[in-house]
Length: 362
Image (cartoon, rainbow, N blue to C red; front, side, top):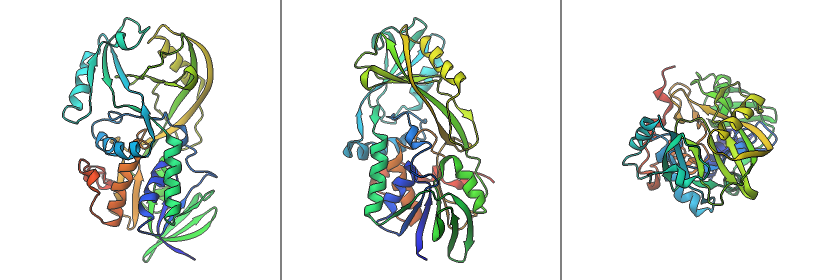
């Protein structure tokens, strides 16, 4: 039996990106429970890159990922317009204050000039020009390909069934067979706490939430230069897609067990109702609907690093809805932590201590 240096559970964007970083320096095994990688969360992303998304403690990872995403051709111009109602001026001020000094460009604007058809109650706007489309499928495929080129092995339909710590490493039982590895990486997304329990490691309290998306057509059709439009108080966002379509979400976070998420009729109806209270455009067609899982640690920050109690057990989880936009920097940081190396200079603005699992008392 091959003894791997690192076995990564989960081949979504977190596992794939980390495997690509580690494989040039270690023997890496990537275990995916489904029959294809990225099925649950990565493949159902809203597909935008926003430096403010996730808040000021996630922003350094997002910003540090920008150059790599640009160089790889994974970003395309979009822009973001954050809007607020007449009574929500404190939320606008708080938002601007959160990112003051961060280097993220934010400009107060009149939203009615930026968004035709906006209803009168929406009085405040903040433009975030750096927001971009992100090619999620391309980024994920590139990570998997880079990992394979460097010698990593991907095994699908390999749901973890047992993990036992033995002298010097782990004995792993999966639906695809048995494996041995010195380090076990938990990049299992919504299943992260379940993987920890299987390994005899105390769970952190990573909670999956369902997020609903719909694809619609409207009359009039969206302006060609429409940015991502998001409510500063977090009750919706929508963005233009090819062929005059819109992707719309009610920004729902419905606690759920780890599962193959499906959209609920009430959440789809809520999304459309909220949209119709933003602009005077008529929804003419509901073309597609889907739901994905977003998983958060209790403090809503990602978790990267070795567990303080579980020897050889490394967390790479809790990325919420920002795992894709932070993937390049997060993977470089996590690889440095796992290998005991000095972080890449591109991570100069990132504090790895902020994301260590030891911050949780369990």
